[in-house]
Structures are given as C-alpha cells and as structure tokens.
Amino acid sequence: MILRLILGDQLNHQHSWYDAQRNDVLYVMMEMRQETDYVAHHVQKVVAFFAAMRAFAEHLRDHNHAVFYFALDHPENQQTLAENLRFVINQHKVTHFEYQLPDEFRLDEQLLDFCESLPFTSQGVDSEHFLSERGELARFFTGKKTYLMESFYRMMRKKHNVLMDGKEPATGQWNYDADNRKTLPKNHQPIAPLLFERDVSDLLNLLEKQGVATIGNIDPTAFIWPVTRPEGLEMLRFFTESCLPYFGTFQDAMIPGGWSLYHSRLSFLMNAKILHPLEVISAAVAEWQKRPDVVAYAQVEGFVRQIIGWREYMRGVYWAKMPDYKSLNFFGHTRKLPEWFWTGRTKMNCLKDAIGQSLDYAYAHHIQRLMITGNFALLAGVHPDELDAWYLGIYIDAIEWVEITNTRGMSQFADGGIVGTKPYVSSANYIDKMSHHCGGCFYDKTQKIGPKACPFNALYWHFYDRHQDKLERNPRIGMMYQTWKKMNPETKAQIIAQAETNLARLDEL
Ligand code: FAD
Ligand code: SF4
Image (cartoon, rainbow, N blue to C red; front, side, top):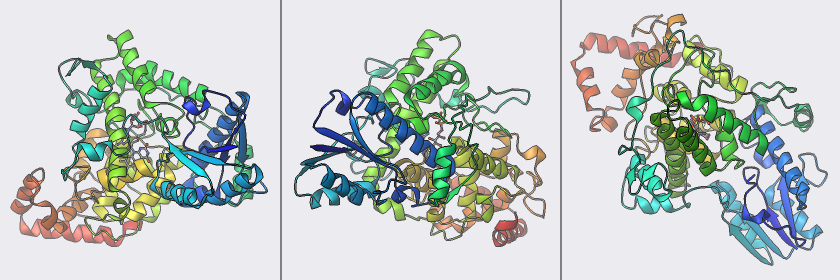
C-alpha cells in the first residue's frame, strides 16, 4: 500500500496524483491541534480550512479514491502529523510514503524527519501549484542584497508568456501602476461582495467541544467564504465579471464599511490550492480580451502583477531566507501590540475600521494591512513576533510563507530591505488621501501636537528620528531627513514629546 499525505492547504483537484484511480493508494488527511493551536486563529479561518478539507475528501471519495480522514475528534487522532501518520501506516501495511512538498518550513522539517525515521521508501513530489520552483528566486537574484520584485515579475511574464508579444510586453509597457490606485469618489457606491451562506454549525460545535481557542466573529448558519471548487470558480467568475473593471483603479482605496471593494478575495482559494494561479490569471486576461472596452488593460496588468509577481516573489523570498527570516528585527523593535488590535476598540477611525472588519470577516485588503495596521505598528515600534502572530491568526489566507514575508519584509522592514527598498510608513496625509476615514475621526488629521492630534503624525517623525542612523543614507528617504532637519527645534521637541506620550499610552489611543 502506498500512503499519500494531503495537507490542509494542498486541495489541488488538478494534481496528477488523481489522474488514475488506484487500488494500492490510500490518501490521508487530518484536522489537528498541531495546526489549530500554533497561534490563536480567526474562527473563520479554522472553519474555512476544515470545511474545504472535508469537501475535498468527499470529492476524492466520489471519484473512487480511498481516503483516511482524521476529524478533529476522531478517536485515534493523536493531533500531530507524525503520530497520525504512524497510526495509519501500522493499520494499513503501508510500504511506501509520498507527500506533496509543503509550503511551510516547519512542516518541511517535520516531514523530512519523519521520512528519515521510516523503514521503507518515501518521496516528496511537487504540489503542481506554483509558477516558480522553491529555489528559483534565489537563483535569479544570486549575489543581490535587495530582491527587486519588478525584475522577477518581468522574468515570470516572459517565462509563462502572460500579456506578452514575443519578448516584449503586449502593449510595449510593463507597469501600469501610475494609472491605478485612485481614491474612491465620495458618491461612489461600490459593488456588494459575493457572499456564500454555508451552515457551519457542526464545525463550530466541534471546535467548541474540543476547546480550540479562536478569535473573531462568525455567523454559524451563513458562512460567507467559498470552500469548494465550484464555489471557488463562482467567486472567480464574480471577480472577473464585476470587480476586475475597477480592480486597479481602486486597489488602494479605503472607505468606512467598504471591506472588500473591488478586490478578488481569492487568496484563501489560491493558498489552499483550490484555484490554480494560472487559471485565475487566464480568466482575468480572457475577460479583458472579451470586453476590452469595459476592462482596461491597466486593471488586468495590475491584477496579473499581484499573482504572477508578488505572490510568487514572496514565496521565493521565503524559501531563499528561511529559517533566519523568522527572527529578523532590523529596527530592534520590542513593544507589545496594543490591546485594541484584538478588539478594534480604538478612537482612531482608520484602525477601528480595518481591525473591526478583520474580526468580522477574517479579511482586510492589502492597503489596510500595509498602510493602516502595519503602518501604525511599525511607527509604534511593535516587535515583529507580535505582528506575525496577529497577521498569521487573523486572516483567512494567512499561511506562513506569504504572511511572514509580507509582515516582516514588506510591512515592517524587519529584513532591513530585502523585500522593500524603504519602510512603508505614513502620517495622516496618505491615509486621508486614500480613504474617507479622517473626516469622522476623533483625532484631527492636520494636527501633530495636542490631545486631538492624529497619533500617526507625531509617531511618523519619531520613527524617522529614532532610526536616523539606519535610514538616513537610504536614497529614497534622504529628502525626509532634510525636511526634519529644517524644522524648528522647538516644534521638533514638541513632536517627539507628543510621540512619547502616545507611546506611553498606546492602549488608550
Ligand atoms: P487582491 O487584491 O484581489 O489580489 C489578488 C491576489 O494577488 C491575492 O489573492 C493574492 O494571492 C495576490 N497578492 C496580492 N498582493 C500580494 C502580496 N503582497 N503578497 C502575496 N500575494 C499577493 N496575503 C496572503 O495571501 N496571506 C497572508 O497571510 C498575507 N499577509 C499579509 C500581511 C501583511 C502585513 C500585508 C501587507 C499583506 C499580506 N498579504 C497576505 C498580501 C495581500 O494583502 C493579500 O494577498 C490580499 O489582501 C488578499 O486579498 P485578495 O485576494 O482580495 O487580493
Ligand atoms: Fe486615522 Fe488619524 Fe485619519 Fe483618524 S485622523 S482616521 S487616526 S489617519
């Protein structure tokens, strides 16, 4: 008997494993405390993974594949990968073990150790999901300190012949960022998101009975996220038909209550491998080809860039830099996350909205993660470990390979500039430009000093001031220090004092 392991994020219906139905193969899948407990996860994240795994097991059985499924409360479930595998091996006279290469370093190590302990042969096979190999980015950037995403993205476009005309980009231009990223007009009514309505009461009862600690909110009788392949394809269709025409334009926009705007919300489906990145990109390109008058090229290029560019790039950085990446802390930040990150109870409108919706939907779009929560935490000097635990727990799409590179790298600059060329920080200016949050805020976006001053403003200068030795020589930041130096010394002292006051009472902001 051959035993084949399917991890919770390996729900790839199109994997060549399933091409033939074989009598000598047993598939094993497991819900485990090892996975539910390594951080406090959002309840919707745990439910989404378990529901998707159960649907996948069902799909395999419907196609005459044999599946051993450890539900969380299965009487023999030992709650760890190795022990569960040993149990199945003993029960089924297994003589060969196969697994798809995992995307997380810790699981990779566990599986390598496990295979070494086996008295028979084993093999790790490709998950047939990503568009680049694990080590491809490291080879591409050999000898470089900073990994420039744009050059990796162009290489990937050429390699997969996406939006290309021979060796050149289809329109003669690689990057349409300048056409995108507009703010939402005040009277603009964004499209209502496509929501599903699955009853997940059974899963919730199971989590409760087993004492799994979770965060966030959920409607047990109307779970909104797609978890099966047909639902995934419906979500993809909804995105290309209804959201893609505005995707790039409003990619960075934020409005109170507009929790997903024109974003695809396909990250969970892709990270669990229910959808393949190439089929997602192809659907978007096909929509542009079908309706070029409705879907402008800039929208589709902006979307393709996120997937064939950023997503593959982050995975490459992960495999190039782990395990050291997990402990990088370039600025030496040490603070704890303010308490309201877990409740959303803050007077700062932008943060209240971004955190509140994360607790309600296990989702925030990229700019909310980067320029609201991430921005504030970086300005406040929060320890990257605290942030990793938060981002890894709260978002439905959070898996370490893509969470940690985005959090430590892009958002916190804790890698000292591998992913980003400068830290993503801003004062209220940027937030006000891209959102409709500041108007109704307790704080005043224009003030730097005083009890009503927006905390971002003083913290922004405090950040640059305290990290001058590390940042001043960065050519993309030098100008900022010129402005800071020219500021009146008394004002500077007041700003620093204001920031210190904010830092001393972070929980009350
Ligand atoms: P869309 O805006 O519709 O984009 C389409 C797709 O592009 C996404 O589904 C995603 O697969 C990909 N994509 C876009 N930006 C990125 C990026 N920076 N890195 C990798 N892929 C990208 N993404 C995750 O999938 N899991 C995470 O745990 C995660 N953590 C993040 C933490 C921080 C601090 C930040 C700043 C970003 C994080 N991201 C993460 C990246 C990005 O925010 C999400 O992929 C995106 O918001 C998911 O929503 P969407 O599917 O609607 O994306
Ligand atoms: Fe956020 Fe400051 Fe604007 Fe309030 S004033 S919404 S805290 S940026």
